Image (cartoon, rainbow, N blue to C red; front, side, top):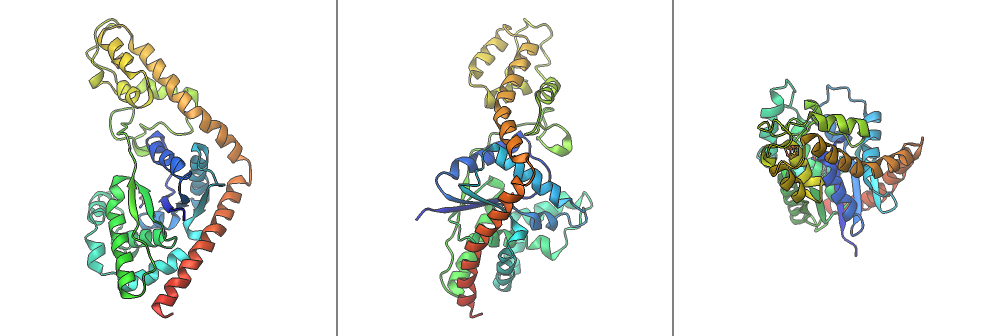
Length: 324
Ligand code: TRP
Ligand code: SF4
């Protein structure tokens, strides 16, 4: 039987090119695996219940981002977490036998309280402690065999495996123990050299137009030791070069031309902007298709139906095993 994967993202705003490798990894996996990709709106509430998030808009944005990068609803099931109530039921049942200490020792729990707590967020809630348990329910309600995620999520996958093991031991062997599939994620800085993040205003959005790309590349800091364009440069200290390393096949030429003072920074930036534009232009075309009224809604509706069909089968096994 074809192996199954599930992954998800919180709908917290439109994506930038730093997210691209993760979604492109999903796009290649969807050919090989029976794939479920979910927009986890409940998870967004665990750290932002006071934010009055505009979920309708946020869900549409992230779904468009996924579809425009090449998530194919004929191959993959794309849906919103809160449309499939089975996730909540499984989370509740898991909560009955999951020791508090397991949740308290998940490393992201204390880290996030330290980081986000400083921004005045209230994280002393039941929902926030249960974040990884809800994630385990997201995964196990589909009996997924693998979960493509970033490295930061591995502690959550570990908890998921422990919960599956405990269920199987206490009741009946219903669940697989899913593996984390960590894809290669190139370390991409923002245009100012800090981490790329919408909140730092240093990101290149997936929807950036040619003009926006140009102006972002314009902002990138080059080798400050280079005054004239025929001065030898040092690509190692240049943000433009960091992007060339990821997006330019002939990066060796760029390095040589820079070191030899054979190319000016203006031309070097123009070259990068062209490559970024080539990268994003197929997404623009697909996005235009999916932006037509009703199309995203149709994908999410059908996705929820397909997801529910699988999830409700699992829940039958679960209720049976627990004697409900
Ligand atoms: N915690 C994940 C993140 O922040 C999002 C997520 C929720 C998820 N449920 C999931 C990822 C299930 C993979 C599988 O990125
Ligand atoms: Fe950076 Fe290119 Fe200028 Fe070299 S030539 S410093 S790599 S922008």
